[in-house]
Image 1 (cartoon, rainbow, N blue to C red):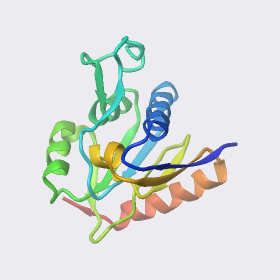
Image 2: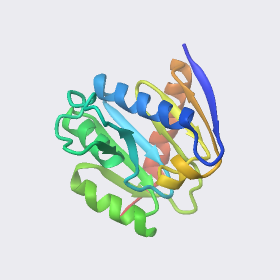
Image 3: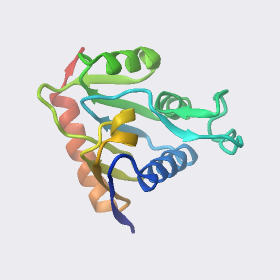
Image 4: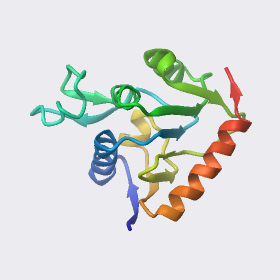
Length: 168
């Protein structure tokens, strides 16, 4: 079992490495359902694939920059249900949702400030929005856990948040 807190100030290699590792591992062993809660969300680069090491994990990616949309659409292709709770009133969020099309479900939760990602394999939560600024610029603090009890509790909670959210 594993739990780690990652703090970043002005972006952190530790944070980006953790995110890239978690999201790549999720592509290897995809969850049945994946939830991301982030008021603001955008198509940030997650993995810089300069040497094409991730070609087998993300077979449809043609760029050396693997973005969040690329990753989420790969999860859908591998059979996961991906759900976002976000604020489409933000321009970057609207643009991101347009990239995903109808393959990813999303809902709106008024006045939401909660942020995180929950899968069958891990639970990430903290101050970080899933945006370029959240990942690479802002000072953030996130906790990542693979403790099954924490994941189960987070899945119950996020499913309840999904139900109380509004279709857009």
